[in-house]
Structure formats: C-alpha cells, structure tokens
Image 1 (tube, rainbow, N blue to C red):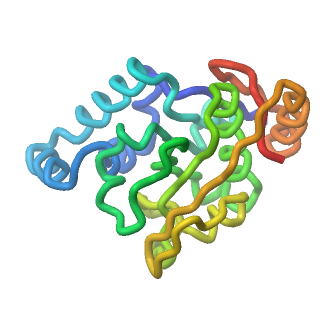
Image 2: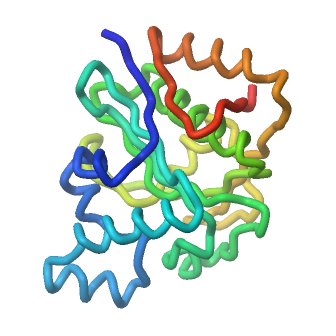
Length: 212
C-alpha cells in the first residue's frame, strides 16, 4: 500500500488520534493547560495554536498516511511559539533551532523505519526554509505502554535518528540535529524517503533536502 507525507493543516488536524488532538502539553503554559482541561477546551486550544503558527510562521507539522490511514505525525515550531519549552531544566532551546514537540507513530508501524522517514520529512521541510537545526527535549525514562499517548519523545529514539545531546540531564536532556543545505541534496532526500516509505508522495511547501 502506498504511503504519503503531507503538511499539517486545519482541515487534516482532526485526523490526529483523539488523545493527541486533545493534548495541549506543548501548546499552552502549564497553568493554562490545567484550566483548558478543566473546561474541556483543549481541542479548541490545539486548533487555535496550529492556526496561529500556520499564519505567523508557516507549516508546523507533517502527517504520514498508509493509503487513507494516518499512521504517524510530527509537530514543530519556533521555540517562542511553544510555551511548555520554558518549563524544562535544559531550556532554553537554541535561537537558530526549530523545536520538535509532538511525535507519534502507530504501534503496529513502529520498527519499520517509519519514524526515521517522518524525521527526514520534517528535516526536508525545514532545510528548504533556511532553518539551521532541529532541537527537542527528550525523555530518558519514558514510562508508557506502546499504544499510550506520550508528550515527550524518548531520548533514545532521538539519538537513533541522528540527534546529539547538547545539554545533558538525567531525565530531560536537550538534543539537536544539525541540518544541511543546498539544492544538490534534493536527490538524496527523494532516495532516502523512497527507501523508507516505499511508494511515497511527499507534499511540502518547498522542495528541499534531508540530512543523510
């Protein structure tokens, strides 16, 4: 079955798993998160955040489909658009980096290279927009079942796809992936994504490259 990668929009945001669609861990300050959960407004808050980032900065995520089924997604934004970032002991993120926040792959598709392909799709988008690096707060001690929603990406996964620790911490390290630039790398991106996704159609705001 063919797979494709598309950018996040307000139209396809509702296709995220319900637990992820209702989660505003990254999108609002901690005290506002509790308030939104109390009044059942988290889905509206999520939509408002995506809308704001799309208008002020541009594409802020990638979705991966297998046929018509959403099998994974990633969200990212400039650090100043991510209120939760300031709460981590390894904050602040670097000024030249975009922050990877939410990242999820359906359990039955894990271990197949799909997570790596999703990271490559993110990198392909950001490099073409002149971004220097992607950073993420990792979790050194993820405690969750395979199918449970988690808000912080396991640090071990980030390292497995090329991120390097720039500020260590026993629980919440900050990791960084340097991006490469240059139109000549476009072919490398296409080859890498085709190998990992199979028959893939990648829709991005701009054609770009990916770190090898």
